Amino acid sequence: MADSTASNAASRVYDLVVIGAGPVGENVADRAVQAGLTAVIVESELVGGECSYWACMPTKALLRTGAAWRAADALGVAGTIDANAVLKRRDSFASDWHDDGQVGWLESASIHLIRGHGRLDGEKRVVVSKTDGTQEQVEARHAVAICTGSAANLPDVEGLAAARPWSSREAASAHHVPKRLLVIGGGVVAAEMATAYASLGSAVTLRSRSALLGGREAFAGELVAQGLRDLGVDVGVGASPVSVSRETEQPNDLRPAGPVTVTFDDGTSVVADELLVATGRSPRTTDLGLETVHLSAGDWLPVDDTLLVEGVSGQWLYAVGDVNHRALLTHQGKYQARAAGDVVAARALGRPVDDAPWGAHVATADHAAVPQVVFTSPEVASVGLTAEEAEHAASDAQHIRALDYELGHVAGASLQADGYAGHARFVVDVQRGVIVGATFVGPEVAELLHAATVAVVGEVPIKRLWHAVPSYPTVSEIWLRLLEELGRDSA
Ligand SMILES: Cc1cc2nc3c(=O)[nH]c(=O)nc-3n(C[C@H](O)[C@H](O)[C@H](O)COP(=O)(O)OP(=O)(O)OC[C@H]3O[C@@H](n4cnc5c(N)ncnc54)[C@H](O)[C@@H]3O)c2cc1C
Ligand SMILES: NC(=O)c1ccc[n+]([C@@H]2O[C@H](COP(=O)([O-])OP(=O)(O)OC[C@H]3O[C@@H](n4cnc5c(N)ncnc54)[C@H](O)[C@@H]3O)[C@@H](O)[C@H]2O)c1
Image (cartoon, rainbow, N blue to C red; front, side, top):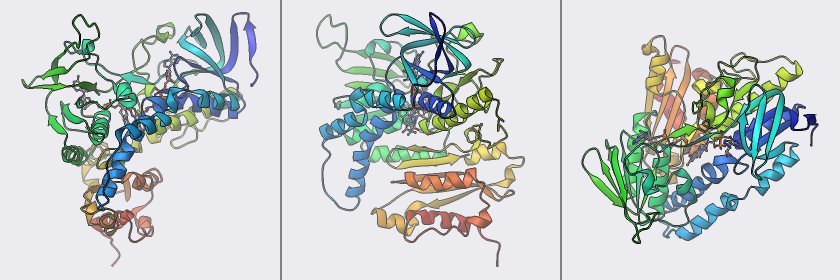
């Protein structure tokens, strides 16, 4: 364990105190320790956070078998999905909800762990209500990083809380496949979990108040809605829930578990065996002592590009990952964490801070180059700006061009699956001669994305991209087709 000294009988001092041992908190602490600082991390649940046990890993394990089955089916390979085997495989990806492996990693990385709920107690002080009922105070010599993540929202709808709906946590960790599942929401969680449970045999109904996958290119949501319908999902857009009721299985049952009925504002109602509410996230900042440093409990924590919380003087309070609301994604939070851990160390050790755009100590990519894969059927892989966002951001909307191409027309795609259908778009700033956004929608497009991320972040000139030759016959030939849509002024 790296050096830690006691300032008084009740408190220990570390260079850095991190609250929250999700993927982001772990990485902030790791970078700071690698630079020579001491660090403690405070965790109230499982080391590894939402991503490891209730989000990325278990949900992708639930989705993968269906995707593989559809890929085989498209080539005429017959077979059925064993839902119990899928749930069992998912359990192993969630480490059976034990965090010993990650605790071992913290030890190997010389990061001290305190189990309990952390709260700020004024500048550079954190009080931990430990799981054994005692309290411990820790002091930060240089910095505190809040990495407490986010939790599922539950809208204020009559009868909803009493009906004990699933949040993403229950959907990710369920040990049975409901016969009928109603999903409320039209975002990433709703679309992915509707895909997963339809693949596992549930009769799924999805109700969204607006078009699916808002914030992305509109064709992405449209193709995903069609994909869900092809899986047998009853997709309805334009309806918000107004009341929920759930039957009890036994008289006087205080925990109703019978069928649930949801009535919507268009007068329709849906009956299901389970109800998943996937209506976005809230910051885990309600019980964090924010008021002791003149911030408001329950708010997201906006930060500058070095991840310092805005409005707090003294360069000591950082907020990294979901809690700062920049990009609610594990990979982007870990990217922020690398910058934050390094800049905490640089400031502590009096080393130069590299905070110019794209410098080592800033999360510049958060603004213009966030990659994301939505693991639906078809998948949606996107990075950077949509055409609409680019037009808003440009000094002249005429400088922005959207290039579109049907993915299924690429030779590699037709080889990959019979009836391959998909769509791709590049958003190009023709004045600067660079790609500022890309979206691929189709079966197994996830691995196409990183090339686009490199092109957007690297601002690779389109002139040079003509020399990046995609192999034949791969789906990556979409790059050539999209460049041809733009045309080459070389004759
Ligand atoms: C269903 C679902 C699927 C997802 N799939 C993907 C995906 O495929 N790819 C992707 O990139 N992203 C995905 N995400 C998003 C991803 O899970 C989050 O972006 C990521 O977990 C954020 O990491 P974090 O460390 O900021 O927060 P978290 O992972 O939420 O970790 C925060 C940690 O802080 C702890 N904590 C909170 N408050 C306190 C406190 N006061 N004291 C002590 N400890 C505290 C929590 O217990 C938790 O362990 C998904 C999200 C959901 C809901
Ligand atoms: N593959 C991935 O990368 C992945 C997978 C799952 C989740 N995530 C991350 O997790 C985050 C949370 O996902 P999410 O789907 O919960 O949120 P979201 O913000 O993507 O979608 C929320 C949906 O709920 C709807 N909604 C909100 N309030 C409502 C209300 N009161 N009544 C009815 N509908 C309402 C919205 O219109 C929207 O369709 C996302 O930001 C995403 O980045 C990522």
